Image (cartoon, rainbow, N blue to C red; front, side):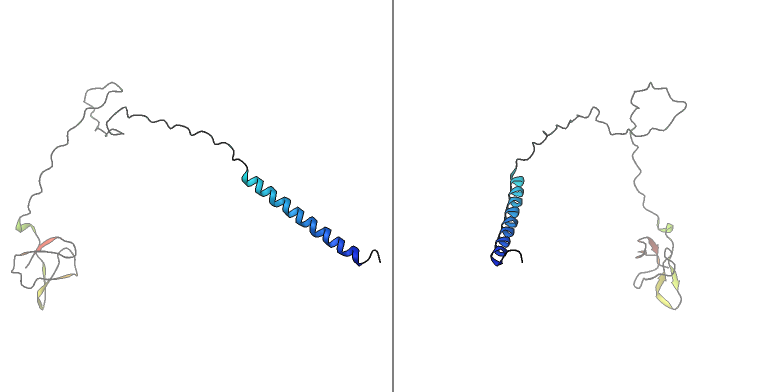
Length: 143
C-alpha cells in the first residue's frame, strides 16, 4: 500500500480545488468577454434620394402605330391623346328581355331563361312584369 488514509484526503481536496479554480477561471473569461467593448459600428450610409425628373407616368402609355403618320425624332414624347367620353348606358326596352319558361302544373313557378333547371317563384306578379333572376341578377319577364 502506497501512502495512508491521510494522503487520500489530501488528494481529494487538491482535485476539488483544481476543479473549482478551473471553473472560476472559465466563468471569469466568459464574464470578461461579455463585458468587452463592442466593435465600432460602420457609420450609416446616406441613401441617395432623387427627385423625379418627369411627372408623367412610367412607362408612358403605348400609342397605336400609324404607318402613315408623321415621323418623330427619337427622344420626343408622343402626343397625349384625350380619352373619348363613353356613352351613357341605355335602358333596355321591355321587349328585349326574354320570358321565363312556365313550369307545367305549377302556375306560380317559372324556369329562369338564364339558369336552366332553376325555378323562380313569380306568384303575385302579373304577366309581362320584369323580375330579377336571383341566380344571375339578370332581368326576365313573367310569362
